[in-house]
Structure formats: structure tokens, C-alpha cells
Image (cartoon, helix red, strand yellow):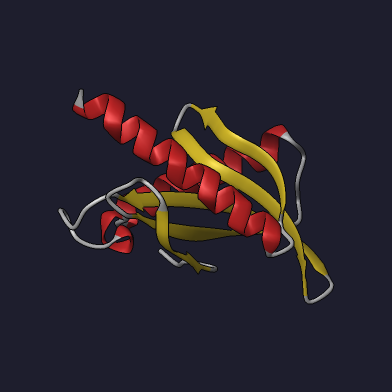
Length: 125
């Protein structure tokens, strides 16, 4: 039962993150992209200072206060995994432009509604 609730919570957070990124002008080009390293939650594209960027977005959703804040759930090992997946995505889709890793944290209230959402751009290893 816990796995099912975690999956539902994660899906709700990813949906909210996708909506927020769309409202900020990002073009969603993939969701739940999988390769040998794992999964990238959302891949988006946007022009930044006249340059096209692809962003690999990790979404962390919290439905309670256990285990800290969303950003505390992402360590250097997770970021390295996203980076490796990003390299493979670029190779697979022949992208030789600029890339970065972003993180979106989503907080849900007890009713499962988004109470807060935050976007961290260009997260470094």
C-alpha cells in the first residue's frame, strides 16, 4: 500500500511540476524518459539568453515532513545519475546544444493538493 501511495504522490508532483514549467514558458519534450541509468522525470527545452537549452528535471514530492525537504532527498549520486542519463539522451536524440539539471520540489497538503512548489535552476554536482 505504501508503494502505491508513493507512486500516486510522485505522479501528482510530476503533473504539478509539468504544469508550472509550462506556465514558465518551458516546452516539455519528454516525461519519464528511461534508459540504462534510470529515469528522468521531465525533459524540457527553453531559450535562455538567446541560446536553446535542454533541461533534465528531477521532481521530488513531499506529502509529509518525514525525511526532510525535497531538495534534501537529492544527493550528488542522484545528480550524477541524472547527468549520465542526460548524456545518453543527448546522444540518442543528436542534441549537441546546451544542457543543465533543474530540480522541482512539490509539497502536497493532507488533501493531496499542491501547497507549495519551488524550481531550482542549474543544480550543480
